[in-house]
Amino acid sequence: MFNKIMSSLGIQGVTVETHLHNPTLQAGETLHGEISFKGGSSDKEINALYLQLMTMAEVESGDHEFNQPLILEQWLISSNFLLAANQSHNIPFTMEIPHETPITEVSCRRNGIRVWINTRLDVDWGIDATDRDYLSILPTPAMQMFLQAMQQCGFVLSTVDVEKGQLTARNFRSTIGCYQELEFVSSHLFSGFNEVEVSFVAEPHQTHVMLEVDRHFRSDQLLTMTIPHHLLDVNQIVQQIRRLLQIA
Image (cartoon, rainbow, N blue to C red; front, side):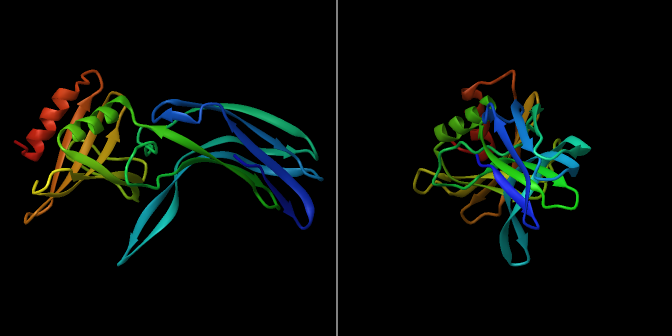
């Protein structure tokens, strides 16, 4: 966490800092915190105070790829008010993190996933004040059980990333403008698999899973399955994965 102090034309500016009470949580849970901000050396008109849930996503453009900050959700906390010189304010907040928020806390060879809260105080005729605070997003029980099942099926999680775009299947579609890809490789020689890329599209009562299967000497295949949250059984998930991937 850091406090970024902005100045405009050499005049001491507005400061803002956000304190997160529970920075480690699962997607779909409620984030609690408090925003502290203070006026500068003169009165300032504030256009808006926002909290933004953000991540870094890969963007494909022609033959090139680059990383781009992406807003997953934005909350307007307050708007159009006068911030008097040197006046301090504290605003508590609670907000639900979207169910599709990328998970950050997974063990693999390469995991560069970052999710953070960006606080932005939009200062009229001045330089905005901002603060960035990182979140640790844990896998939900359904995701954790799927990861365990993949391991039992002989797969190892290799890399995790986030890509800009939308997933669409027959019975579900993603909604936040990006999706997470978890790349699994087989732990067995001569398994027939190059890799299996997995994406979760979580909802309040179920988690959809899209699997892009890359096999030796065969075309890629897109498969889907759904895990009801009231029927979490790792053995059933193992059997379902084996059927989908045609593993003996």
